[in-house]
Image (cartoon, rainbow, N blue to C red; front, side):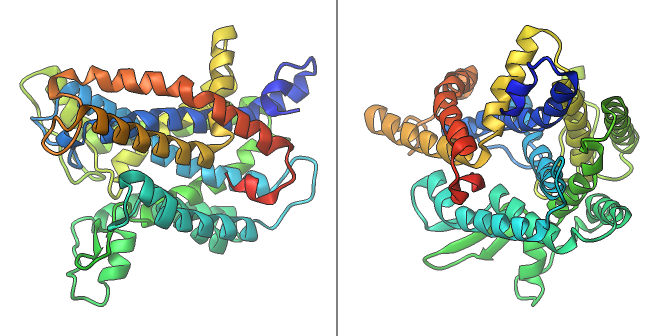
Length: 398
C-alpha cells in the first residue's frame, strides 16, 4: 500500500501517517513541475536569456515572474533531500539505520550523472561540462554523509551559519592564478574551472550554500517522526515559515543584508515589486533562501492538509512526479532535447542560429509547459509503480 492510497483508508492514524510522507513527495513533485516550466523557457527562449539577478528594467514581466516562481525548485528540493535522508535513517516502526552509506552512494551517483547523462541532455554534446543543480545536490549529500552524526543543535547551527553567513563573502573574488581558485569556485563563486581547451568546465551552482540547506532539512526531520503530533508539526512549520518571511521583510525592506543587488523604487508598483523580488540564485543569497524556504514550509503544511476532492487529486498527481524524481529529471531533459532538435530540423532556426519563441509571444512557453506535464505523467507513473514493486536495488536511486 503506498502513501497516497493509505490516505483513503478508514483508519485515521494510518491516514495521518501517510499524509505526512505524501506531502513530501507532493511538494517535491510540485517544484519539479515548476522546474519543467523553467527548462522549457531555457530550451525555447534561450535567445532572450536572463541574467542573475535579472536585468531591470529590460526583462518583461511574464519572463520575470516565470523565472521567479522557478526559484522555488532548487532550495525546496535540496531541503527535502535532507528531510528524506532523516526519514531513511529513522524508519517508522524499525530500528534506526546508518544514513552515511545511503548518502555517499547517492551523492556519488548524482555527481556521475551530472558529468554524463545530464550534461549531454542539455546540449547534445560534451564540449562544455556544466556543474549544475544535480552536482550541487550530490555534493551536498556527500557533505551531509560526513556531518550527519553531529547533534541536532550543531546541524542547525552549521546550516544557519552557512546559509546566512556566506553572503558576507559574496563580493570576494579569488583570481584564477590563485591556488585557492578551484576550491573557492566550487564552493562560492560561479566561474570557469577550465576555461580553455577541448573540454571546458564551468561551475554554475557553487555548492556551499546548498550544503547549509541540506543540513537544515536533515535537522528538520524529527518534526516528521511518526510519534509527532501533526498539529504540533503544522504549527512549527508555519512558525518557521513566518520567521523566514518576516526576516526577509526586514532585511530586504531596508536593504540591510542578504542580497547584493539592492532594490530601488521604479516608475510603477509593478516595477518596484520586480526590483524587490530580484534575488541572486548563483549562489543563492540569504534573501533568496528566506523567500523560497519560507514558501516551501507553508506548502508542506498545505499539501499535508488538502481540502476537497480536487485538492486531494492535485496532491496525488504531484506525488507521482515526486516519487520518481531522478527518472522524471532525466526523462524531461531528453524529451526537451529531442523535441527541440526535431522542431529545429523541421522548421529551421528563427532566432539567429536557434529555434525559439518570439520575444512578444512568451505565453507560448506556458502552453508548451502545460502540454508536456500530462504527456510526461504516464511514463513517470509507470516507473514509480515499477519502483515500488521491484526488488532491484538500482531502481531506488531514481
